[in-house]
Length: 249
Ligand SMILES: O=C(CO)[C@H](O)[C@H](O)COP(=O)(O)O
Ligand SMILES: [Fe+2]
Image 1: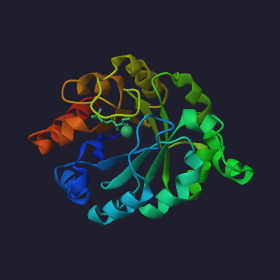
Image 2: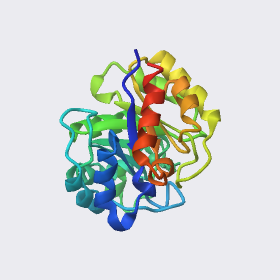
Image 3: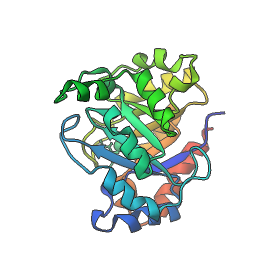
Image 4: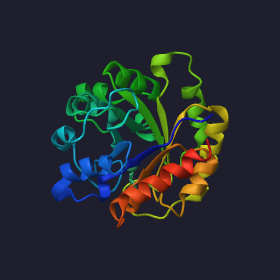
């Protein structure tokens, strides 16, 4: 049996002027997690916000009572230097720090040698480091990245270096409200076949119109921004996304 459905509305589409209430409302409407998109204007061509905003919204949502529980802050780090911000986000109240594979393997433009050693890392080092800061670790791949780069990471026998979740992007990261890329679903299916109990998240263009394909492929963690925050009845959308995943387990 695959893991339970987790519905994670992306607050990228929430009312930023009333973000605390938007966050508590979406949990009351049946959301499992909050998906928090952090963009730095380098790794992706857009910017959002940093740890101080996460600190401000944290008191509006009760901390999860167990790993992966309701109220998990799922921080999707679309940033060029993922290692540099781990401690800040832990202090701010992040529960799951999901960095991009592509950022972890590429060298970064650091200002000083000291910065460089702080920010350059490998995916396995990153996962270990996130775990050392008492957070769950997620690893994300962009549409241009083949899924087989993850086999070595997921097959690792060193438990501290194994991610708690894989995020398969179903849009090119950077903006909400884009068209779902069904071309990415074979990655999800390949992951589900190899790892029946892995949390597999899909992000980008998920809605009532696309959830069946994603759930059929084996995704269980569903990010939806515009489909939830743009809905007349967000609770109904959240329930439908959850049902679509649950009925395939
Ligand atoms: O990571 C993201 C964009 O890079 C967002 O999480 C994603 O796009 C969600 O928005 P929507 O559901 O509207 O597509
Ligand atoms: Fe995201």
